[in-house]
Length: 355
Image (tube, rainbow, N blue to C red; front, side, top):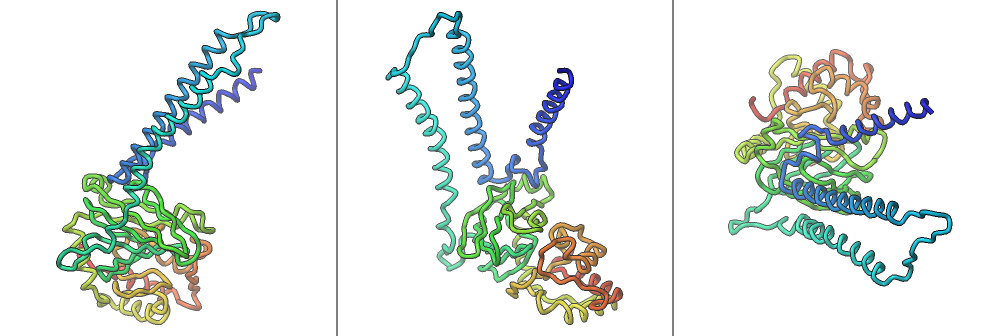
């Protein structure tokens, strides 16, 4: 008996810890710390539904306790009062659940329709300019591509958006089914190969300031062996900073290498990488991530620290780091160690903004 009691104590402790830890999360990655109006509305719906369900549980437990205590069988010869066929009871336990469902359904449906309204996509002002920012998101195995069709910009892995305004997304997959999710900004939306899904998100400036302008996005649909590593970063900039980024990207051109090592790396890139990767923000290359501003990225391959050592490891061991990805591993016969050093130096110089 004592042995089982100890086990139950451990189970209880772990259950409590799991409950506590489930509420923990960093503001750049947690859905429980909303950073925009869309996420806040969804979060409020969660709390409202939990409140209603908790109230139902409390009422049921109280009624159950009353029934057990008041109507318990006191002797073997006693038969408790039978209430089968009571129209009053049948009406009560039919009407109450319907009312509870309505209480939850009405605000849920209202928010769902409001957040599903993407009619603003494609609208133009009197001068013929788009009224809203639209981003085409294309999911690949295992990376993300972001195209700004009205701005003529294509980039990957780092999504850049302005704060304090709705940003509309048109999401599709280039291969298998994925799911686009930025937890602090709102719920996920599937990326399918055969159709385009649309929705909008927004970011509050103060929330962006709290996380140094960086949020984390993930794939939320099991898509293969490297599903867990299909991450991307979201840079939420003020309107002025975003406009500056747009100008820099539009005016970007292949930078001139600043060192002999980087110049050698450019030759290696042109011979070994140019067939798949682009280094122009206007070039729509679907085979591999656009590397125009690679030197400004927050991570290598979405998950590794952004430095030359990790970059070289990715080039050499990409299949081990992200199993199932389509980038070949470049061994020493394909790219020597000296060439690899030069290539890493060149890629780290691919920047469009002076910092």
